[in-house]
Image 1 (cartoon, rainbow, N blue to C red):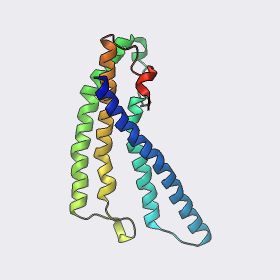
Image 2: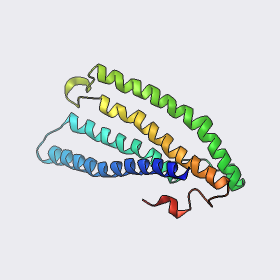
Image 3: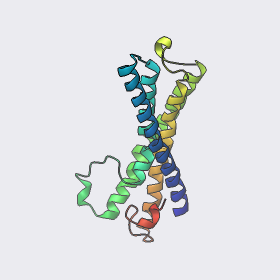
Image 4: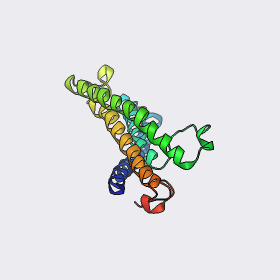
Length: 178
């Protein structure tokens, strides 16, 4: 069980590292556009769109990784008073009942969204921006898959903790070796 959790966590970590590398590309595109606009009086719709696309990819690729690191948004107002085993059971239930159906919807509709974009050869409005809009749209279902992988990696670890074979799914350093 921990082996499968580790594999899913590694995939999420790899996606987050790709997102981290894309930060350099985003920075380069922004600098190139600023220098071009300020010193050479140029303006590019495509570069502006590329910035938005890179920003979106960076944000979306990090969801699964954030879940494996317990860095996602959560309201602990009520659950902070519960015992750790009860909180873990609540987390598992939340993942199964809420996160999973929502991510499945995103995967289904996001895949359809990207596919229709591909079939139509959708590009930028006005023709001055980027072509192949399906590429950025395909990141939507991919990020939902990564979010599910990250969440179920945590679920598997929590099950091991609840069985008494592990202390804590987040604090046990041996689990998070890269």
